[in-house]
Amino acid sequence: MANHRKAKLSMIHRAKQHGLKIGAVATTFGVLVTAGLVSHSIYGSEHKVKQVSAYSITDDAQEVSRGTSRSQLQGNTSFIKVYINGKARTVFGTDFTTVKSVLETGDITLEPNDTVTPSLTTKVNESTVIRIERSGATLETTDEPITFNTVYKKTSSLAKGTQKVETEGKNGVMETTSIVTRSGNTVVSSNIFASYVKTAPVDKVILVGTGSSTSSSTSTSSSLGTTVASGEMQQWAHDYLISNGYTEADFSALVYIISRESGWRVNATNASSGAYGLPQALPGSKMASAGADWATNYQTQIKWFISYCNGRYGSITGAYNHWVSKHWY
Image 1 (cartoon, rainbow, N blue to C red):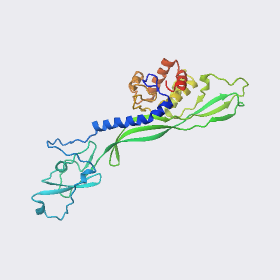
Image 2 (cartoon, rainbow, N blue to C red):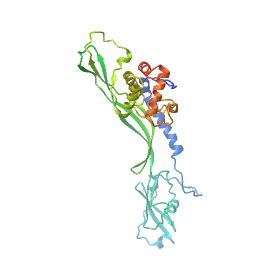
Image 3 (cartoon, one colour):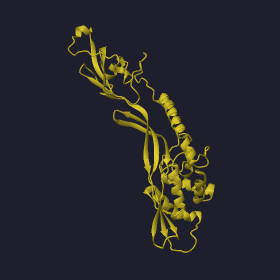
Image 4 (tube, rainbow, N blue to C red):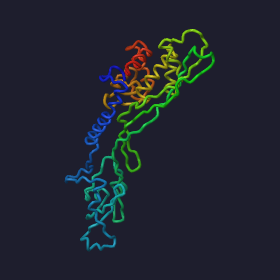
């Protein structure tokens, strides 16, 4: 995370706090659900409407044979079947006109994202079957891979033209928690609530022999080696840097930091701090200085990252050196 955050945590410290983070996410989610997703009537009726869930709605359901004579039901009483997520209830009433009138009579309250068939204004009769698919908001966590990079580093300990794998690459893990709302089997909405690098990727390091008899000692910048771009965003970042006078070491430093800060997710979000985007700017809106599309454009976010590193550490490699030492920048 960038050092303008209030909390400067090491990777180990973050891991220790992971349990607390999940608890905080769940707590905050509970508040959101209570505040924004609580059931409410959309009919505007004046009488008090009973809250009915998809499970409790059938508790007192009464099955009535279609062969029962109307005289036994008194007057113009009708009955219509209503299914909520496949669970049935029979609604009794008089002079039903539309689907809406049936639901009002049955005190069936629609949730904000329920799907009703037929529509609320459809006229009904005793052969009408009303089906409601009730959506529910849940926290869903997924793990996705963070692709590792291949880095070539020169060494005089190998004969010129020879190569040796020093470190095998390993993908990292990006954990994303989303608030998912479904209607039946259809996802109505999915909003990222938190997304962070659970496990950093391990670069595949390949040593390239120079055959030189001089000392293998190298500067920090040159020891970064040459990183092979992986994917569209990295390729753009590489070309942008090189065309603007930066070095391969600068690109290697950029890839190293962003891979560990955001896993190259443009919408990576830290639920506890509010840090956002590829560089995990805090707050994310700081990146507006690089462009109005800072929330969705990776190019804007990378430009801001470069500017921040230059301003704070004098260079991208300077930011890299600080990150390696402190595990934040």
